[in-house]
Image 1: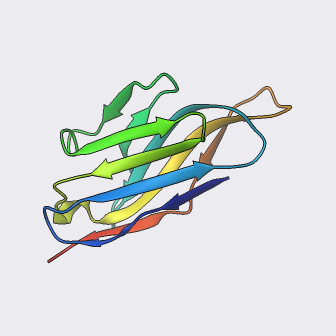
Image 2: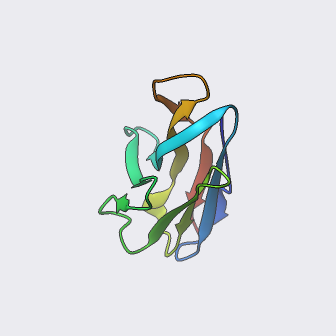
Length: 119
């Protein structure tokens, strides 16, 4: 349902852009977000964006990361600038989706994409 892409290796201070595409019998998508999990740590919220475009960020990424979405294409993006070694983690996209023919909302996760910030 969710396919993430765009991870990789980047030097400190560099940039990466992550993308996530939702597919399937989608009626509508509510919140979309990005989470990350570093080795030995719990998964944490990085950024979330509502269907109306309101965004919230973890304090650690404010001013450096920007989340966006394209409702027509069922995609979301995370532009990451001024990357630091502590941003190294597996990044997961997330979306709350209502499928065609269903009345309830379901939480979906992408497969994860590795981001490594190192010189």
